[in-house]
Amino acid sequence: MRVKFLMLMDKYLITPIREHQEASMKDIYQLLLKRGLTTSQRDFSTHYAGKSPSYLATTQSLSEGAMVAVFRKLMEEGRWLLAWRVARIILFGQRDNEVAA
Image (cartoon, rainbow, N blue to C red; front, side, top):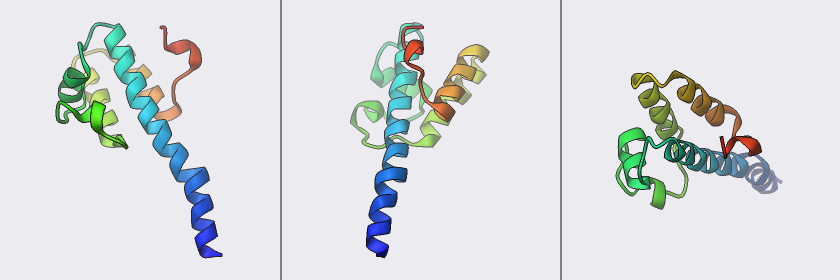
């Protein structure tokens, strides 16, 4: 019974959270790329996420800490509105119509 409960918990709670985090970080990368603030995944990983150059390309589950680091970096650079959009992506996910914005 306990094993079945844990399997259901992983299926419906933990896995969607991991997928949301990964999608969110890639959405944030795409947003900064379209704005011309980063030139590559390597640049994004080091400059904004504060991680190794291959972080975005090779990491299976992305950390909340890296997403918060991106938010903080944008705040330091005075990019208030973009930081607000990143915070909303981190907290609530990406809207379908926002990818092109």
